[in-house]
Image (cartoon, rainbow, N blue to C red; front, side, top):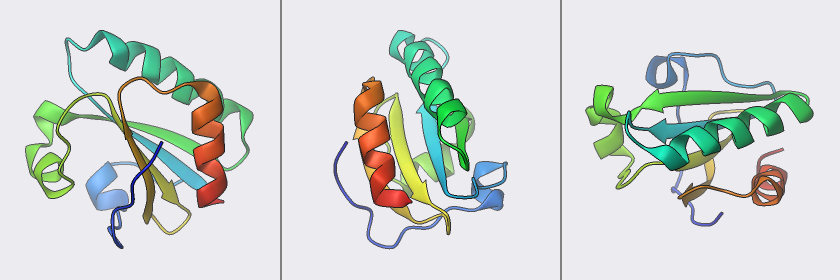
Length: 108
């Protein structure tokens, strides 16, 4: 997982869900995306393992304004947010569990 989104912040209004106490894993998905299903499973497992971490999945097609604002070009795209909702990491494609856990270290 790599990349930084200079000071971009997301909150309840954009996510439709509360931020995690320590970090939030935001997944942009689309209906016919097979890697999105595997990504959902990986992020759900990590959120279940790490206290204070929440997983939020967003349907890219239903939230085009947000997709454009964040320059999401393909699904799945995963954003790691810190406790304040700041984007600290971004990755496209299906992540490995170890990479997600490592990326969380930047957020907590």
